[in-house]
Image 1 (cartoon, rainbow, N blue to C red):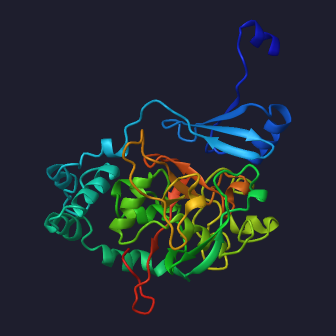
Image 2: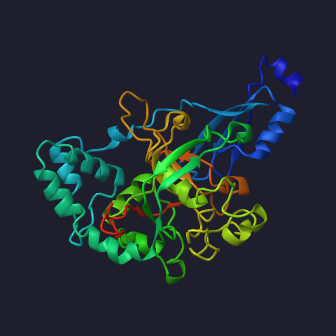
Length: 378
């Protein structure tokens, strides 16, 4: 191989491979192989987890650890460019409803952008008419009927988020370990199911046998819009990590030998999702926080966010003006295809907000009302 490269005046710059069913994340197998065989090269992964939306990731690898590199890909429209709700008229049109109160527009990104356009108008009238009394009319009732019965209260307080640099090894974006103080929150015992999601999108209705499977193939925009229409929200990354590990410094909610009792993952799921709640819950009564499906969080993915994270109720969001593309969004928890290390409480994955995959879903969150722990709409 080396002789052929030299004859063609070529040089090795990276180790390259594809993931047919997995995300483009770096694993311990990749790390050990890379360090033992090609320690000086980059590591490039193309994920075909969704063949219609291939993802490319590149990593700089050394004995000190792994750093994900910024990959400049062919131009993809910025989410703001795609959104057709930049003007008042366009926003109102994007929020037009069908007779059953659901948005006629099938592009969740456009609908969410339209909501934001009206939200920040000096005149509150259009927002009240088309969002409060339009798109989200009845959200509180939907939340109380379909979401609240499965909610678990997660008490607020301080916990240590992330990993120590000494133990991070090949895991990207998990350092530094830092203290976070969270307000109380409500989190669903289960990931959103096909049956629940079909209340918002009847086209996603499934057979009775699949009704209690976690919904997958939903983008971050789809998940965020469903959550808002149902009167809730997505959990922040910090909330998700706190709820998963209950503040424990351990890697999972249980010792690793007991993980099959708590998670559907690569070693026991047989390559397919399973009905929610069929593994043992964690100490808070939350099921499938490890495995079954990855779960979208509210945050933008920023690999260095932990180094500058606010201490109280952190969430990585903000303006993307001047950027080539919108930031990726965070997902957590691993899936039925994941190795144990990817199901860890602190493992971070990221994908574009418009991305979807057959092992990627989400979970509902809410904020307790001040009236003695009652449910809140958002």
